[in-house]
Length: 146
Image 1 (cartoon, rainbow, N blue to C red):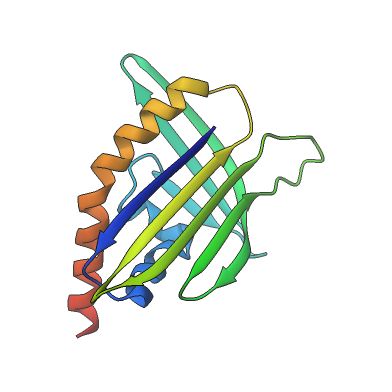
Image 2: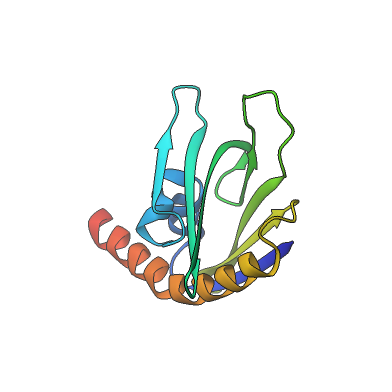
């Protein structure tokens, strides 16, 4: 499964990148990520939770940052330490200058089949709900920096 979403923001690329380069910030604007815990080795334990009608799923992933090129691109990949084979989870975020603001493009790749169409539906709904929260978080950041 691959899902891509864009958001145009009236904020400079550095401000947008600051919100997406650290997974610990995601719970402030993304409801399907209720909790993120940083690990001493720089990885994150990311709790995912989604609900579709009466059905709910939860998943914990250990994610590492595999690419970090501020203020343009960051990549996170699943990297479990239990020695077992796991489905791929890869999240790419790219920020481009756009006039006086910027464009954020996020791409999520899930290489398993367990969640399938349910995950796509939950993600699509969450992307739409998260847009105003992300813009609000950017607004709060810019007011706090001034």
